[in-house]
View 1 (cartoon, rainbow, N blue to C red):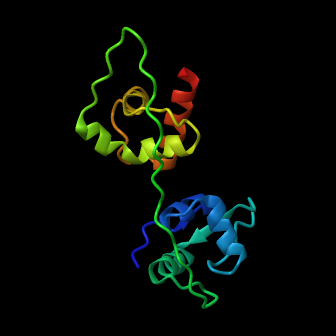
View 2 (spheres, rainbow, N blue to C red):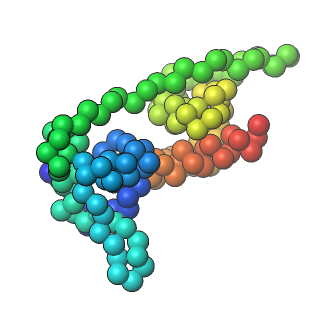
Amino acid sequence: MDVEKQAVSVAEMARMVGLSRQRFYQLVASGTFPSPVYDVATRRPFYPADLQAICMDVRRRNCGIDGKPILFYARRSIIAPTAPRRAGRPPAKVSRAAVDDHADLIDGVRALGLTTATTAQVSAAVRELYPSGVNGIDQGEVLRAVFLQIRAQG
């Protein structure tokens, strides 16, 4: 298994295996995934490269370290009602590329409770917050920033 970083946080490990942090902690408590190790100085939990490989193997094989099979469900797509149009304003034009590029962000923002968030709002927030693009930036941080930006506007 190819592991890129020497150590990752619990939240990053959860993202690497495609789970929410809460669900990942539940599966650690149940013995499906290994527990993190703790930095002696900061007491912060983290996953070194060897435990990252074990976690990725658990996800790949659908079998926990306790030997029990585990089924991982695919992410749900949340379909939100369309936002009502404001009188006098034509609907915003959004390119198909923007929809494809930001589909995960749109799903994430809607899952966080902004069910009326539009593709145009997400695209505008990304352009404003990250004029150089989001490549190389942690997707969780991008989602958080976009969510806060849209919520502040609404």
